[in-house]
Image (tube, rainbow, N blue to C red; front, side, top):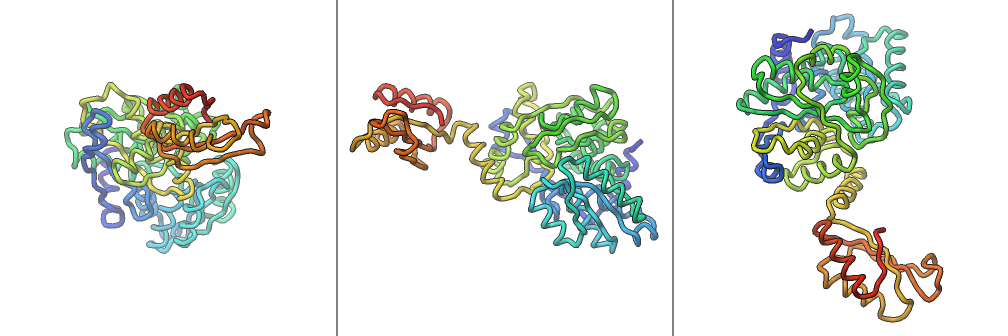
Length: 400
């Protein structure tokens, strides 16, 4: 069982080797949610993720023989990055097995840090099986991403820092995959401030911890594609469940539009870039109106997101927020009709981002043409007002 003393020892062991990240207040997110919000900015670690804490703590406790032989792990990216960085610092060879869908930025950064990267398997479980086999075949030390007391203790150091910076915190929302981060934080918080709520947040596409707690033991779940790839593990850890027993106050399941919206909100309001797993805490808070008026800390655990994915997420997030829409209109194919359509849109206060005037694949009636408009709008009410204005002008328009 991981104890407060273990976590305090981990804090001393990793001091100076990981960043002691800030936990500032966020006036913008406070206005948005009705809470007094603070953000634990652990995406400011050198590798962009809290995973460095557990990796540094685990590697520091290897024997001389284990250090010489090296370690192996299965990871979608952030655990691998933490091991790669601190393995290089300590002179420990690191091999990581990453699923084939692991974000390219994480794969490239692991290799840049000197790790031997093997991409294998469509499922995280496939990567884990190969990593464990390599450990047996090559005499390497297998370092779990979350289900290990030293890893949990390292992640729990976040809890110590939160309580030092926000001692009167009422609730902490923590992204959860296998459960190592939330388990470590829960051990600290329930020992030092038991009235504070500890709430796990995980994607509906990978309800790993939710299924494990419902069953009373780790169970395998089907993991679907999710923006929160760092939380996409198929089974929670037993050590994590043991540490969470009697300490977890709830689990919030969030869908993909909610995660995308949270990424956009953090980018726009907090001026910080986080990956899907890092934004999960905000997505969870946005569906907890019962926390209004409370002092809340959001753990932003990682910022490693591909720029191409970030671009798509911004577009999807704006669309989910009603600030971007697409309208397909049928027009008479004659001069001036497109200009009239654009004039109506302008009068309604929308900004035209893109126009596709399609004569070749439009309506069946050859006397009509399809115009597809991508518009920047204020909100969903604004979109409805645009549809109403078009209908009143006799133009058929539907969502694209």
